[in-house]
Image 1 (cartoon, rainbow, N blue to C red):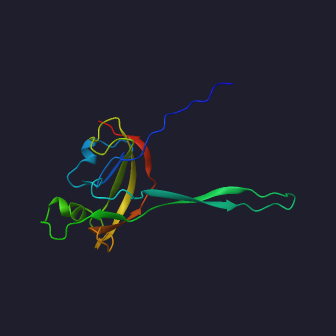
Image 2 (cartoon, one colour):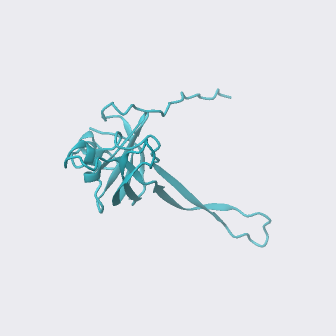
Image 3 (cartoon, rainbow, N blue to C red):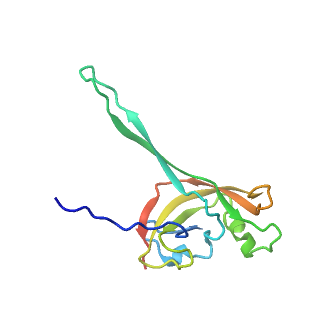
Amino acid sequence: MALPTKPALVKAFNKVSFGFVLTVTPTAPTVLQLTATTGINLTCYTFGDQEMVSAETEKVTLPRLLCESTQYQSNGPTTYSMADVQATFSPQAAALSAGKKAWETLLEGASGYLWRRQGIAPDVDLAVGQFIDLIPVDVGAGTPSQSGTGTDAVFTSMHTFSITGKPTWNVAISA
């Protein structure tokens, strides 16, 4: 018997970045597409506890035949969902400034892709050969908000995303 392969653990702390773009080729995204001026790198706008995509696959119990004493399951439809995105927001900042970029880019009714890169520090540029996830989304209403009511509260904006298609997982950025 062959010995098991033991892969190295990859720490996740401070090794996730994500952003939003209007257009990308899901099977071969390029750095140019991912860094287009119509999109935004959301990594420094969102908070450390931001959740991304979750998937829930329905388990269906198949009918039992009269001659059987056991029942079996089958996988049903999978639903992809994600939490609302809470981004930093500066209510008094000038238009087109860093304090309002997320607010001004994540416009209700826009369709595009959220991208997520894992395993690389956020201050490293996107590059050919890195792997990302692409999630097709529609942007819902954004609302000005704040992170809480205590002395540690900051102004934020909440943005709703609906996942509109099957995500493309772990695809390489191409040239």
